[in-house]
Length: 503
Image (cartoon, rainbow, N blue to C red; front, side, top):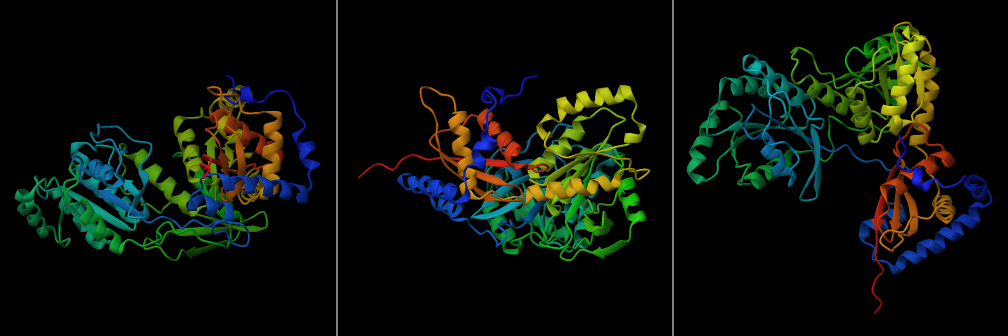
């Protein structure tokens, strides 16, 4: 299978050698000339902030606060997905949920009156009729543990059911703000139906019509009065031991890995401040260093339901990633790589965290399986070929110490900053050797580039036109070849800008 950026490879070049001849002073001078050329283009305030370095600390790191989390819970068919779409202002959630369907994405980034937040939609799967009580209660429990504010949606035209009352008992115990949303109140004539829901004991019901938008702005106004600026649940810490999330599908060996590491080294267990659900993270000494292995959200597995299992796993994974800096994705080499394995890796990429791939049960691998495995890795994990690979046995502890250099490499890459002068020298030399192909008689030019952030390394390219996705992948690949970046995703954002008309 051909790589989509092969078209841009051309012949072998001497890019590394040519860049070595450009000293820092010359690179800075050239970058200053390119930067001054941008003054002829229409730039907005955000552009200027990026060009001036924004809110970076002295180490050149931009710390993004963890967005506050709003969770929407409720029985099937009460209008949760319609409310998600209404709050987001775009059609994201599937409105007609089909039994047995599990969506890959359960959280969405939203913005309302300049306040950014994460919205968790607990819809998307339909429990069987017999288990509906337990299923919805378990779903509410997950939501309570992983959010800052709960929106509990009830169908006002049906009224409170036994299931709703079951969930209310859970919500009353939660030390989180809970808003009772009386949905499907399409006009004033239905207001009395919403008023009846006072009986649930969750304070004032908020009558809304998710379908038509009626009352949603009033609801959000109330929510944002109590929603924190930064999530208390997914708060990103600064400093201290580097934070590692161990991820993988069920029964892949996560517990064995943690237990082996903890048993062989001194373990310090301490409660994480700033959360109401008090998950316990473990500080483990490995390779002469203390690491914090973050708990995957501390969700209790009381309810063993087949349907919705992917939903819970996905939520736990996202919560762990929010708190982690680097993810170790554990893969069982005795089984074929699965769609779920790839989905977990893609969640890491979406989160922007550093990545290490740990191939577990390596001691059980025979020659035949090894051949198939290499083929699977080449086919399914091509997009993360840059991630360090470690072959281990969590059960016996074999090669566990190899995790440490892989983690250190990935985190160092995640923290890497390329000076603006060097980055523009790289772009100039690369484009001279491999110019972007003509598209419709025009050739987009890269005017200037800068690294806007680390963790992960994020580059902004100011251009005169849209760059082909293949060409952007080519730039990323060459960045890796020249500067390493082993173990970290790289983000490249484009800003297509036009020249200001001359007055």
